[in-house]
Image 1 (tube, rainbow, N blue to C red):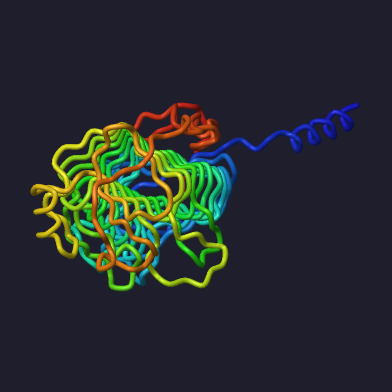
Image 2: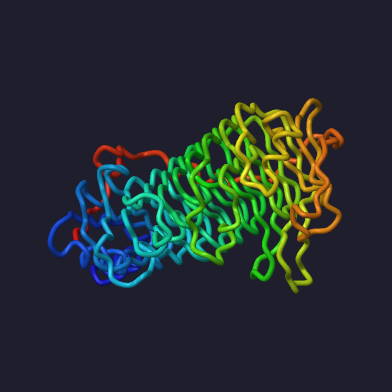
Length: 414
């Protein structure tokens, strides 16, 4: 009987799920090795908890284990300092699914801040990425950079100084970017070659361009669209473009508020757009040559709803700006369309049209005139847009002042 009971107990123990563990990391000597070791040895369900303080790191970090949470003591409490980082890689690379990153900061990574690639159902919550020297072409390209993912929630993030895009989501599906601040980047927030994206309740300020919705050729994932840009504060995006030459965003004009290029089904509504000196809203076709037969360079079914405009188009970075300003009475109307593709706007929307007949011809071929477009024919289809609801559940149960999880777990310090 004793033998049978022992065997049964062993079988039950083997069938029981592993208890989630907490890997506790503190700053100081050996923190780099301890943190990377925890990232490697973590098992699904584990948490890596970073105590408050500044961590001096000389190399990038990586995580490839599913369902892991990396948690700090707040975006100003736990700082991963990459100022002395060797090489040009990202600060943190994530290649696994179900990961939650929250309540910590990265400063001065040589490459991107946090990059996740092929990482489905990922959450970025209260993450800060800062290049402390301010706008500079040698800063990393992206602050928060999920790409090729299905299920992305970016909430309460702040990025400053990225030489491409502060918050970038590319080649992904089912996305929400909200409650975040993008300041003094080339592009504040960029949604590229992605579908079913909701961009709401963010602040984009002092960037070259505030919020960009792009579709580009020659990428593995094509056909961006089904995007809602709503209830954002897009103000004073007037930083000179500091992107390295050859970068696609190097062509973004200083003073662009919200820019849609070559996307399908985009709604822009209930935003406050103030002091964006080139154009509060710009809707244009892709202008460069391409050979990708899958690609449509025109914006399609873009809808400009009710927005509040306050001081825009007064210092446009456009060829012939003086003549344009004179023609429109000293300030350009808030909505600029190049005349290609399809655009509708609610009644009373003030705008102007370049009346181009072919993409890529530039302003030299423009015949500027007042914007005359139809009103939206039917309500915008919002179904399926945004991150999966299940990602919301990961945002509770944390005291950001100390970074400690509320639920009881076995502690496993590294």
